[in-house]
Each structure stands twice: as structure tokens, then as C-alpha cells.
Length: 495
Ligand SMILES: *[C@@H]1O[C@H](CO)[C@@H](O)[C@H](O)[C@H]1NC(C)=O
Image 1 (cartoon, rainbow, N blue to C red):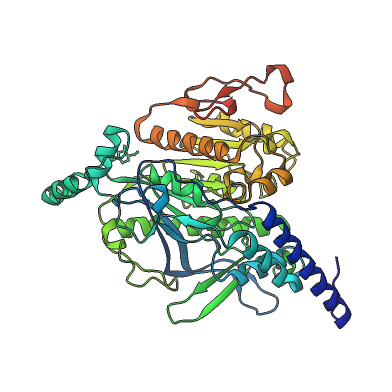
Image 2: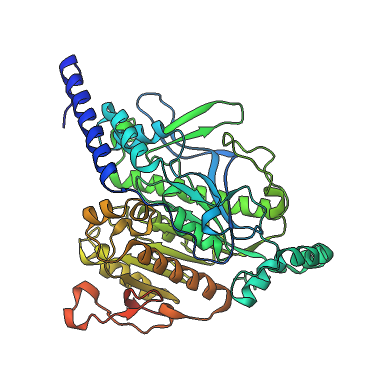
């Protein structure tokens, strides 16, 4: 589509925008178009904190922007959103605390980002308006900068299998034994690094990630600056700000000439560096060296010193969706030069066009695909059908699971189908209820994270293979099993 500049076209755009506006107001008055995010599934209240911190500057790839001549892949700061279990009691739904608006701020940055992504930068105010319309009433449940869960509280909830009202007694007991427990690494928390998909943002998965945190995990969702998201701002320690927009090949200087695949490789290398920096940050927090300044505007840091001696650095798992799933599998590359201290990986819908998938994996891995991802098969980089490529990789892993959640679509693990359920259902044609889908994804992910700690296979993970060839086999050989919430899973590979 080509939009010409000129009064006449602008007037039409304005007319169009106001028509859309009136239409949405009309729809709104008929039916609530958006739903609030549901409570998290685990026993703990969660803390949420946006953290941006300076890291050692480095250039991951020497490609430069055409218009500014600046490095396109230069790492200066790391931005993450932490979701972590908190020692605060779980609030009843009526007085549920909320951490912050679901839409990243400023909304206009994201609106402009999506408009640029769609190739119509002139319509950024329309995109901003649509985002505001659909997203502004949604808030992420949780408590900003809440104190992290203590060791005793973690253990008691683990043993009772749910939250207890003993908060106060526990606190006293804990204060008495604090030193002792810290020495023993009592009730320390496993960690997860999450990497988002193409055109996604770290906030787009708040329910999935917050729920994992509510089961007792410290989750860091990376806000990637690799040019894959709609837009993000780097805040330098000297106060300088730099916007990073969605990057296309044509935005780069032709020297060095890059192909689409090389661009993906550079972005994945950039993501891997950010994952590595996140793991370093976990180590710093655990050592009591919390960043002195939080570069994210208006974001506090009071809870960070409390992370001292609370993290299990032998239990860092990497997870991702789509492009991020490709990145997560990349980060598990044991043959690579900068092998990371990661104990396993979770890949949700590994990318079909995000570059070839890493095959050198020696730690346990769980691949969960949406029904849509499994049913619509495409050829994958001259390696055969995507499904077959994934299956062969996971079969070659010593402890690997590959499964499909029936009735879901590619965005089913994001917040979108929770916030605008009927729009998403209409657009993606899902048959499984969006809340059920998320609960199934969360439960299976948590079971996998527990497996990494205990070696015990439970629920879906304990199943035999039910459908080895999936969409490529005979339809009557595609047997399914029920998940905890009654949804159908097809199991393609098990350890
Ligand atoms: C830390 O994680 C490792 C790896 O999963 C596990 O073996 C170990 O028991 C954990 N440590 C504590 C103290 O929970």
C-alpha cells in the first residue's frame, strides 16, 4: 500500500480514523470487548520489576544503520522485566493489587513501532489509538518491587501444596534462622530467562510468566534490542535516550551486504548476548551486588538487595516463543563457543522463518507447539517439513519432549487471547478456550521446571508417545491425552 502525502489523503485518513473511532465506541457500548487478566495459577503473590542496567558495551555484529551510520547491533544496557514470587500474602480477587498498565509506556512509541512494522509509519496515531482502545483498561496483577519470597515460606508452601495463612509466624521464624538458612541455600529459587517472539514485547506474556513466578520461580523477560520488537528505548547512564525501532534489511547500510538469513543470525547472536547478560545479572543479584541505579524511568529497585543468596544459579532455564523459541534453542548450543550455564529449555512454537534450529543440545528440552503451528506444515530451510525437523532434533536430545496442544493458535501463549478473547478467536480460529490453553501451557511448563529439579515426570510429561508422526502421519493414528484442565495434547516425542 502506498500512502501519498497531501491534504486530500490526510483528510481521508482523518475521516477513516474517526469512522473507526465511532465504530469501536459503538461496539464497546454493545459488549465488553476486553477482559481483565485472570489471577495467576500458583500459590504465591508475585512481585514485578522493570530493570535496566548498564553492561559492558560491545558490538555483536558490525552492520550499521543507513540513516545514522550507527552500529545496529551494539549492546549498551540490558532491559528485563522481573516476575518473582513474593512474601506478600495473596490478595483476594476483589482487592487484587495491580503492578502497572499492561501497555508499555509510552504507548505512542509502541503504536509508532507497529505502524512502522506494518509499513505505514504515517498511520502511527491510528495504531496508537487502537492500542489505547484495546489495551489501556488492562493492568498486570502483581506488586511492583515487592519483597522476594523467603526460604522458609518457599519450603512451607512446597510442603503444604498451597498458600498458608502463617505468614507472620514464618517471618519471625525466618528472622531467627536467617543466617543459618542462607548458608545452606535453604529454599532458594530456580530462575527462568524468557525471550519474546518477532514483533513481540517482554510484556506480551505477563500471564504465562507471572504464573510461572507464582509457582516459585524468578523469571526475567528480556526486552530485546535486536530490532525484532515494535520499539524500545535504551536509557544510557548519562541520561541519553535512544529509540530502537523494528529493523528491516533495507534499514542497514549495504556494506557489509547482508542477506535475510544473516540478519536473523545477527539478531539471534544479539539475543544470545542479552540472555547471557541476564544470567550474569542473576549472579550479581545473588551475590548481593544489585545494580545501584535502575535506568528504567520511574522504576524502583528497593527489593533487589533482598535477592542476595535467594537464587539457585545451578537452575537457570531458558524459555521462548516463536523467534524467541529459536533463540532459546540456540542458547542451549553446547557445541557453541560461549556455552551458557543453562539446565534446560522450553520452546513454544519454534520459529518457521527465524533461521535454522540448533541441533546441539545436551540438556533436557520441552517443545510445545500450538495446534496451528503443527497443522499448517511448511518446508523448513531445505531440511524437510518443519514438524519433522523439530521431531528429529528432539529425538536426538537425551531428555526431550515434543508435543502439541490441540485447538490453539500461534498467539495462544500470549496475553492477547485473554485480553481480547473474541477478537482473537475470530482472527485465529482457536477451538480451545483461551484461559484453559494458558493453564495447560503453564502447568506443563511448571511440571518441566520441577522435573529439572527432581527428575520426576508428572502429568503430561509422564505420557507415552501418542502421535509420533503428528500431521504427517495417518489421521486415525493421532491419539490424544487429557491435560490437567481437560484439553487435548498430542505427544510426539518423549525421553
Ligand atoms: C539447585 O538446583 C539444582 C539443579 O536443579 C538442584 O540439583 C539443587 O538441589 C538446587 N539446590 C537447592 C538448594 O535447592
